[in-house]
Amino acid sequence: MVLTTEPIPLRQTIGLMHENEFGKFGENMKTMLDNQEGSARSEAGIIAMSMFFAGLLVVAFTTNPIASGTQIGERAPVFSGEAYDGTSWKSFQFDDLLDMSWTWNATEDVPWIAVEFLDTDCGHCKNAAPDMATWSQEFSGVNGAPNVVFIAIAVEFVAESSRAEIVDFRTQYENNFLFVDDLDEDIAKDWDVLATPSYFLVQPDGIVAWNSGQATNSIGWDAKEEKSIPLNGFDDGYVQLNEAIVQLMMLNGGE
Image (tube, rainbow, N blue to C red; front, side, top):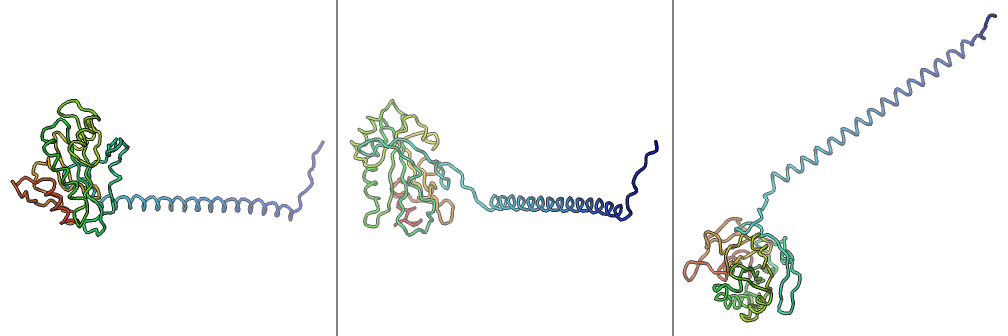
């Protein structure tokens, strides 16, 4: 048996060829456009990422980071704990006292912070307690006086202590400011305190302006010039907390 096929008309054949070729051409064009669009998106993503990392580098190279520590010019370590306010023990956050927008020429009355580390069994701490009571009242911002918040941090360096002893010490010497419980000495370690009493004067923005325990006691921090400056110890050359308060707060926006 001989198989025969019906001849396909020429016009139909050409139509099929055109249809197939144009279909492939359309698919190729679509693929090429998709590839170009994907490439454009990739390039845009690369450019965006490059700009992002370039911005990070600019910030890194133009920002002057402030070290955390307790030497003058460093940012005081923040801490939290339980503090006695004369009536009860309450939660306390050191950074609640800070105003990070403060500047050396600020006109608003933002308090500085005087921090004392003490031991209730320390003889020198007991001798200094009446002065602390006087200074905390003197530097209360009244009648144009410097405005300072006083904080005592009670440690256990000399002998075993307790919260009851902390309360008794505060009451006996009329130190009417917050006493923070640091009997486990965690805060003292962060602040590099090895002896009591130790005193610090902290600017409203958290920068340490004066440290009684530093190698040279008679220097403070000039917030405007961002450098150390000499201070005067009026009695014996050794700068006391009240002397540091007067000199530095008058220099850096104090009342």
